[in-house]
Length: 324
Image 1: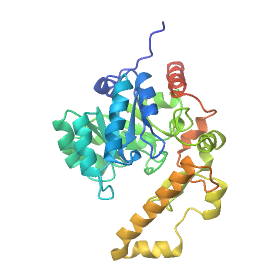
Image 2: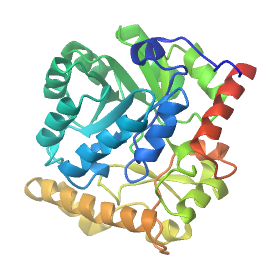
Image 3: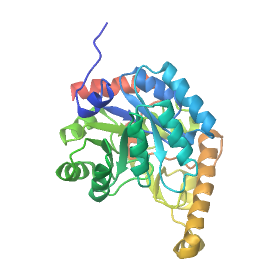
Image 4: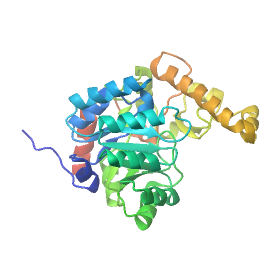
């Protein structure tokens, strides 16, 4: 039997994995099967807590994954006021003792405090130095450096520039997120100073992903040039595949939506309404056969050539890394 390919970084040492990849948490896409396959392939995966409809579903999901995964698993937690289930989710995650939490959109202070009490590591999404320094001061175990090529809510700085800036200003490990879909890209990020990578879009077209075949096939058929930013889903710019439907509806909010978003009293409610409407559209497109296709993805779908099992995608990344 062949020896597994192992790469030693601070992330692999921290989590006890062979290869420095986190299969990124993706709204609607990530599921139990993907995390189990990731853990059993020598890497790790995380899932958004919001992919489970209820707290009971979240508990059941964590227990199911832990019973079948031969390796660490993580949960992505939205830590701002838009997540009404935040406190219950955090309490349950600490109770069930996952290996790490990835925080998004808000202050991770309370999450870090509670997670560390339970012996759980916390990695925080950051897009700039200012926020990275804040979370490091709060005790984060690592930062996930979300660059301008990330899928979903992308940052504004290129991969190498962001890694360099964070290296110069922070001392905790950097996990790079965005734009990488090959083993050669993994090597470039590690050579630039990252200790690991969070990779999502290339796993949408996996056999295990719970979305429909149209969404998976779109990741095969479209490429980096077909990714556009839209603020029509959540009110915050988000990357989607430019399908004919997206071209038809446009990527900018209409004049009334923009006007309401500028009104201080109405802004909060308008953002919440946009978010709810956008999430419903995404859910329909991800799980139902519909012409209203709003599919989130990042530029790394450029490297997706077919729908394959997770284990094959991960093995190919490892082989490409060794041969790069």
